[in-house]
Amino acid sequence: MRLKLTIAYDGRPYNGWQSQVCGNTVQDFLNRALEEVAKQPLRVQGSGRTDTGVHAHAQTAHFDAPDELSMNPFNWVPALNTKLPATIRVMACEEVAADFHARFSAVGKIYRYDLCTDPVLPPLKAGLAWHLPRSLDPGVLSEALACFVGRHDFHAFAAYRGNETEDSDYIRTIHAADLKPLADGYQIEFHGDGFLYKMVRLLVGAAVKTAQGRYRLDDLTSLLDQPEGLPFGKSPLSAPADGLTLWEVIYR
Image (tube, rainbow, N blue to C red; front, side, top):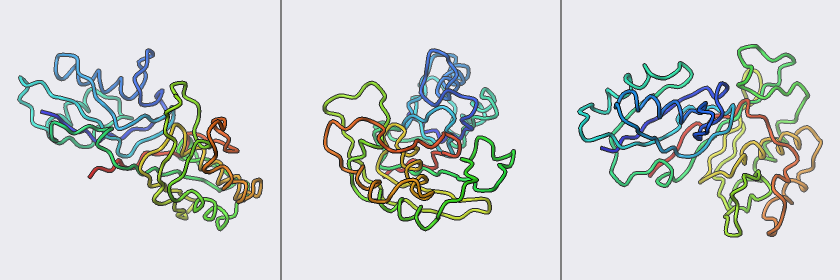
């Protein structure tokens, strides 16, 4: 039986999602929890990576439950959560088709990024929002975000991971890039068909710098659809991991 997990986590204590030798990633903790429950090695496959310090409201993963286990999907939720730290929680578990894949079946993702513009960052916001006490123009911020909507080559808004090839594809479609006012700042929401390594943080950083008057809108748009050979990360600024949350993974 193939099972789909919906997982929420506070990314601050972990070295991102992807399993590493250090063993301190969200995927590592889930794999160990699965092994404890199933009494045999099991591995989850996630919808994609999140970086160190990045949070998730609804990350998605799947695994194949051994045939000899009679647990129904509902029972996996408390069984796994008793083995996980409080900052990682399985929120739901459901049976899916045998050909479902958390990564390859996904058709889109939604990310949210919180900005705090208060003069002092509230302690309960530490690690959960980018503190920007310097004034920014929300109108310009909205204009900057609108530049990203559509299908573009986002090579300039991708960080170098080390596994890139000549055939790597940097074309992505941003369906929406919306700005929502909050009591203490703003929230940016991106809805796209997929995102490159650190792409959301680079988009947010560039838009914020433009809204602060340190970058021009035409300079921003000039980074889109650049010819091949452009160095990675030409966006003027990468926003910190603080404030970034994988909000939803979309499937057909």
